[in-house]
Image 1 (cartoon, rainbow, N blue to C red):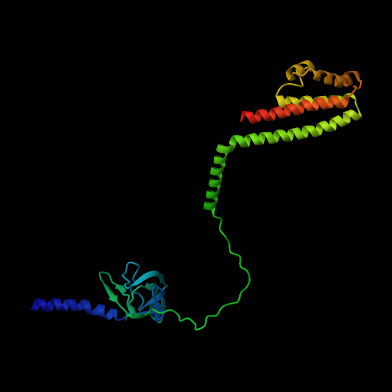
Image 2 (image 1 turned 90 degrees about the vertical axis):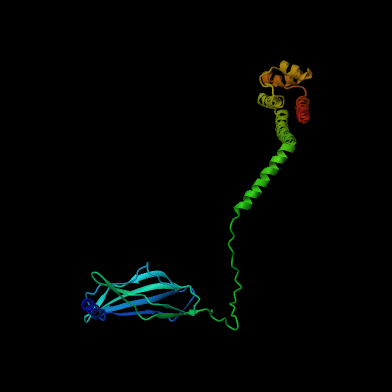
Length: 299
C-alpha cells in the first residue's frame, strides 16, 4: 500500500506543473464563412494565445483533415503584446462530404522536452449549400444586331484527303489517257510553231517582194531552212542545195533556190519571186502535215 501511495505522489508532482502550464494556452478555430457549396474553397483560421517562450506546433499537410481536403496552408509570424503571444495559421480546405453540416477541429501541439500536450478548439461547423442561385422570373436579353465574325479553323485533314484524291485521279488519267494527252499536246505545240512560222514567212516574203536585195533574200532562205530543220530533224542549214533536193526527192526545188541565190550572190532579181516563195512555203506545209501524221500513227 505504501508503494502505491509513493507512485501516486510522484505522478502528481509531474501532472500538476503540466496542467498549470496548459492553462496558459488558449486555442480558437473557426471558418471564415458559415456555408459553402460542394468543393468550394473555404478558409479555416486556427489561433493560439500563450505566454512567451512556449513551444507551439500547428498541424501540417500530413494531418488528417477529414471530411475536408487541404488545398493550401498559410502561416503568419508570431506577435507578442502585453505578455501574450498570438500564433495563427489559415488552412484553405474544400468539403466533398454530403452531410448537411461538416465540422472541423484542428489540434495545437504544446511541445515539451520529453512530451507534448494537445490543445483542441471547439468544433467549427460549415453548412453545405446544395442549391444554386434562383433564376429570375423573366430572362433579360440584350439587343445586339451587330454581325460578329466567327473564326474558322483550317481543316488540314480534309485538305490532305482532297489532295490525295486529286493525285490518285491524276495518276489514273495519266495511265489511261497519258499517250493521247501527250499526242494532243505535241500536236498543239507543233501547230503553234507552224502559225508563228507562217506569220514570219508572210512578213519576210512581203519585204523580199518589195525590196529584193541580198539581206531580204538571206532572211527568207534562212527562215525556210531553220523551220525545215526543226520539222525533219536534219541539218538543212549545213546542207547544199543538191543535198536538200536529194533528201526531199524534189528536183524542182533547185530552181527555186537558184532564183533566191542569184539575188544573194549576183544581186540579180529573179523572174517570179512570189512563185518561188510560194513553192518553198508549200514544201514547209507538206512537211508539217507529214510530221503531224507521223505523230498520230506512232501513238
